[in-house]
Image (cartoon, rainbow, N blue to C red; front, top):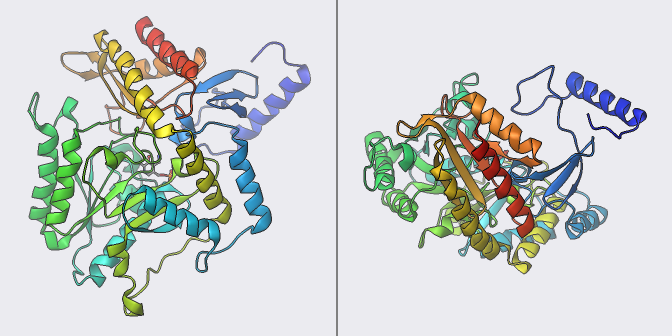
Length: 458
Ligand code: PMP
């Protein structure tokens, strides 16, 4: 505990810690009687202070969502004004921020899209699955109900989204999953399931989807869901051709391409949306959350190509989507999202991320000369450093090493993450995703801490 705090303050902190231990169930965290929770108090840009007054740079943007950092008064003001003006309104009816936001999303996606709002990334994906199944029924193909996703992918924690999630440790105690979800290998050239040094291993991974659709019978497959870049599953960056090939395969089989942009949307990868790295790809459904509001308020969105939405209209002849969420598309959340997007555009955030991201990646790649760094990967402001014990054999770094590296960064004032709880024995990727508005000085600090910690060893 920090010296210099008054006794009264120390007592208050102790009391908070005790209440935390007694009453607050932490997400994705093993209970540890001895551990002290990091209790955030105040934030400034990419930095936050805990209750002890210690200062940290948030190298993971909260949960990869605090894209514009803390304390944007314009965003808070937009929420305040909306809450005072029209505090709640359901989307069985309509309200102005949701109308404007749906039109803005369509414009940003560079196509004609209709959007259904919810509260989170998980819900956005659940919504996508329901829309896809009902679309096929109303399009005359009622047998198309299966979804294909990739091993290592994360698509959310609710049971449908968890069924698309193919990370064993997140599923084992909650299975059986929802029927109809199939998994295929990811385009992971560093540990390619198609063998070492296989050229075009990413394209083999894409073609595998084609084979699975054939084996299952394309008349049974509703959609393929994927992130343009697997994020939480270990920052896996395929070649630009991969997504193009998957899009072609989906089209060939009348299978909907559902792109999960929950992490990669709104500039994280140096394009407004991650799929835009692959020229000519126009997804059927795009799901969003996190960066949509930069984490200031909860909001999820499922944007659907207007041709698909047509099948829910046809002058009322077709059934409607029997789906609702009380708080989905909350007026204050939509107002916040609009302001967030306005800032991203006005401040040229996407180009900045693309430019600075490339130079950070080059710097981090210098670490590949170290014995314990297997591979450094990245796109925009999303970086992964895969740690190994034996570089030739690619033996994953031990749990102890991973924990030590993250703790050493924290000691130096930097919070970074990892692909924890994903693949048994392969939780060896450090994940770094700083706020998109981080100053160049902040980014230099981040890179310097990571370099010094990894050079010290674990
Ligand atoms: N998809 C992806 C790719 C994600 O990373 C996440 C959350 N980490 C989700 C979906 C689920 O989002 P939420 O936590 O808002 O439900």
